[in-house]
Length: 96
Image 1 (cartoon, helix red, strand yellow):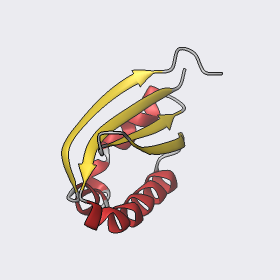
Image 2 (image 1 turned 45 degrees about the horizontal axis):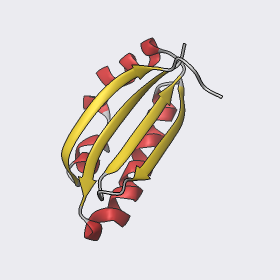
Image 3 (image 1 turned 30 degrees about the vertical axis):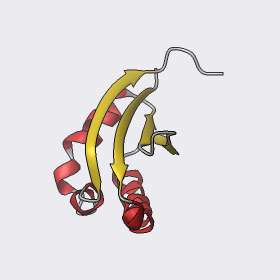
């Protein structure tokens, strides 16, 4: 069964363009080194925060990528542009 990791955070509007470029680079590196990332979705919410959801084929694949975060050079500079970040993992139970 597929799983997701959802992050919620804020990004200063002045940093958004740079954040998007860094996020795209990070996603590319994750996909190149850890199979199973099927989709990412970044949504700007009404309150100005962002919801960033990463869909994985399996929990094992997501877990392996999360364990490797320290090896992704793009991760610290990307996340440095966010504030008040939270994350939750979940399992997809219905998708239409």
